[in-house]
Amino acid sequence: MAQQQEETPLLIKRYASRRLYNTETSDYVTLEDIAGFIRDGREVKIVDLKSGDDLTRQYLLQIIAEHESRGDNVLPTNVLTDLVRSYTSNAHTMVPDFLAASFEMLREGQAKMVEKMTSPMSAVPGFDQIKAQQEAFLKTMMGGWSAGKMGAPQAEEETKPDEDTSELDAIKKQLAEMQAALAKMNKS
Image (cartoon, rainbow, N blue to C red; front, side, top):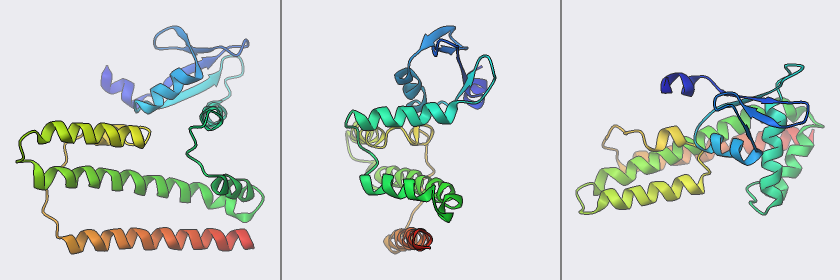
């Protein structure tokens, strides 16, 4: 049953009164509850009960707007400005792919950082407790972006410092190229 829950998005129905109903637990939920489900790694789908329209994007944007208005600023003003500009330029076709790739690189980098923490120091007394604290800190700092990946056991592998540096340089180069392409499209 738990496996099925992870694969199937949590269905939330919006009633005409705009109340949100969790179909799994048969109770009403708030936007903050939905944000909590997402932070816990759960996919969510929000539909209008009457029309069947998918309202997920609308509510996700509303959750982001509420967090930003409370001072939980994750998106700098220049990024928000660039997003607004992307809707009025040819960049709107590239922006979703760019953002998805950027978040995937962030998740992969975070997973590699956790993996690197475990390899050389695992023999140190009390390391497991330190590692758990660091993982909890990273999870909090990253807002649960990799909820499914942080706790997963990682295969230990020996890597050379030069390989780590070259990987990081390659990622930085890719990011710079994507930013340059985006800037070029914004000027067009």
